Length: 313
Image (cartoon, one colour):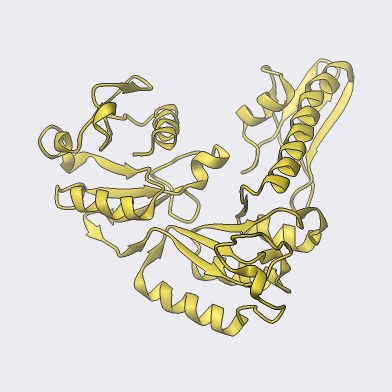
């Protein structure tokens, strides 16, 4: 179990009302410790010390090789359900609801009601080989490729459909080169989401082209729940840190703005239609929830604890 993701999963499951019996970790130095007041035990404990017939096991392992190693340890023990947590859950602070289906939820089930399904923990596809940078020592050799090094869409789609026949895919990473140089990238993204509706999909980029992206592409990425991963290249990490700093500063100003305004409306404009999450008229404050904004999120944004739920849209 990866400690940070495991801690997040433990806390979220407990917050949602689930009982977390134990945290299993192969690292001997973690044994006997507690995370969120839950004991950390070794794999042998689940073989002899738990009621596996009525217990679900959720893996929070990021490394693909480790996923298979852990599954080899546990799949013959008799758990009714064995699931793998999507990496995006911890990355974006998403709710973990084991009773949700795989498409809407954050868990992909390897064993469900004792029926096993073939899974692929992680798949990486190079959409393009060339790049807008010319880094020395590029592990993808992007500096030697020309502009005609794009994976043809028809071939890409057919390969995804063949992979789908193998089983479920936990994590799909679309790489380059620089994937944001691919014309009609939204077509590739839509195909990935249509073929793998349950999968955690990421576009891995150096980040330099993000501010120039077409709004249509960004909307497709949002609608398809595709995240952006910026590689740790020093110049782009500096840009990323500056953007995060400005974003955090802007969010903090929202609290001050709500305080001083007698009338205030806050909208989420990231979707196809604006969604109003807060309405304030002097002392009367109302909120409305959507999949991107729950009450706790709105409280964190505004600094207001006492609000009345009302349909605002």
